[in-house]
Image (cartoon, rainbow, N blue to C red; front, top):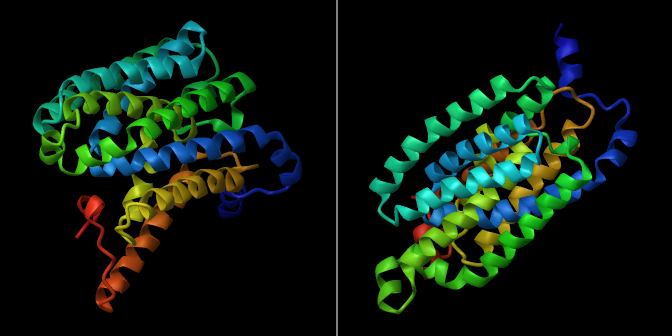
Length: 296
């Protein structure tokens, strides 16, 4: 029995042929890893991990509705994410109001998603994939959607990167300097919604935090540099998703456990490195622009 379980988890009998079939998926995964790593940096700065989960639930509901109606699942996921991001962004920067709205949205979105999946009479794998990810099976049109939305997210981040960083770390000083802090909050939440909708295609609605929170959380354990944190976060996210796909090939297990395990191992390694540096007195180089990112 143990051998059978091991064979389900790691099976490389026809690895060469399978690898050729997922070339497009690997490209899409790498692009989405870049998006997840960059977005993760601001999620940590702005303490939006709970918001990511709330957006993911509405995105799941939108994808489930699209599956039921027989339309593009990625488009449905985007619609749900945009709706959630609009509501959360309208709450402004007050954490209490924002978290209250998210706490209401999460069960509502999950309930709608369960309803739509219950009404759907198609393949059970399609239902399961919305919760656990299925990028290995995405087709060419879906890949084009994912890459297209990812490009939009990257362009938006390039435009707002500097003012958003300032507004995220010290909103009062940023407002005094003329940065449109209140306007940036809904803008970033909308960009976050787009990123979450695409990332769900990799790890599913239940485990999206692994690519939109964990990479930057790991990076902040080993550096405080405003340049290294985004770079390491992207590196960790890409390694997690591409590595997860490469290991998952041939197995009968959904891809998400491999991706999330990769991300978790990277986080543990970074945490261990940070602990060793602290014990040996080798403190991390401090950098004022991202001081708020450093965890005690």
